[in-house]
Length: 286
Length: 221
Image 1 (tube, rainbow over the protein chains, first blue to last red):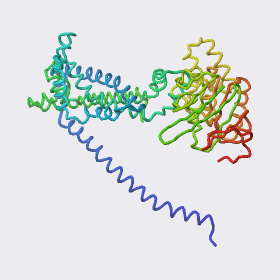
Image 2 (image 1 turned 45 degrees about the horizontal axis):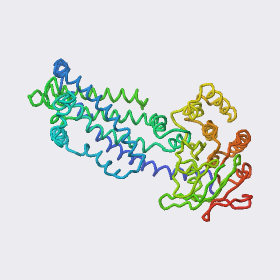
Image 3 (image 1 turned 180 degrees about the horizontal axis):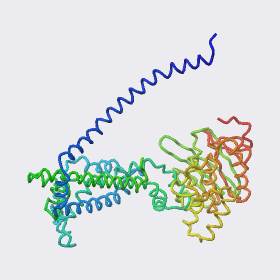
Image 4 (image 1 turned 135 degrees about the vertical axis):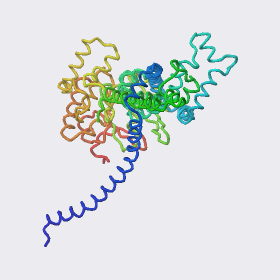
């Protein structure tokens, strides 16, 4: 007669063995595929670091043009990211919460800046500001009536960055609101909130992490923006030059060392901003 | 008083047809019925979260059918409690009073009173994260009662609670019923809840809504 405890123990052993093998394979395949991408990024950074020297890096940073580009990059990315969150939050909320006629059209339009080739987006912005509509030109309205010209100046840099960054911000905010249970807002309305009060007092505080994420993504996307800036704002040194255009300008003059040094500067800037926002914005350190 | 006159609610292929119901002021009514018949839809229609296709909803004789939820002044406790994740327990009790711009003194008094009745005085400073089912239920009930509504709607409020907590909540709901006299419509699947709390019991099925003198005789799914 079999001892019940030994039978159970044997059963457990029989069960454990094949399951353990299958888990190993699972982690090997998943981890192996994931490692390919991580390795690619690490190798890219390592190659940049090996190519340049600290001296090249400091020389590049010492250039007044690069310093001006760094300043404009930080400012324009921050303004573009703030504007993106400012616009992306209500649009993401409306797309998430309400069914309205033509919602699918709005949903599709939001993605256009993401799928459009960057140069085409820049060209479209340029045409928009210089094409007369009913005898009026957007650029001349800003320049003559308000005294604030846009094209080939810093506002064009911000607008070019905003056009793409905002699309990512809308997508992020929409997912944020999609993941939030609308019941809390509904109950808030039974307690006396208008829709606006329910949004400000209940939904927005809950969406804090999503807002920080949207800001981060918009900021990072604005940092990497190049094509639309090149066409719409130009690459005038000390005026409309941002770090992405600095890399292009240094490359075009055959100064590869400076181009790589500026690239590394962009990497450092991106990592610092992402870490600061991650730690202080969401409290996520894991 | 809650009165529904030929209320019809349509949502996609679902139809809640021609509901007639009258609950007198101060009564505690329990609504039972099989799952998917529209009990929650009915509560949502009464508090204004769902538009009715036809018919009238009257609260204390006033037609509120087209009124928005904040104008109806109805306390609502949904099945999932729907507490506000970024607020403390105290902020939940104060929420509706702050919206009504009540004085600090009055808000503090009401919060104190509610926390004593509901037994959540020790939780006031806590976030709602990590509250037990029974504690969350008490907070949701306190939030709904805070602005002294004349009508209270409870959607399966005790379904997620363990047996002991459920009996505690029975006693609490009885106390609320006696102390506030609020007109209550309570949706449940539980015969014991109905027997313990109801002044009147209604049953919702495919034929509509009917009043049942005693639910204990009927099988409840």
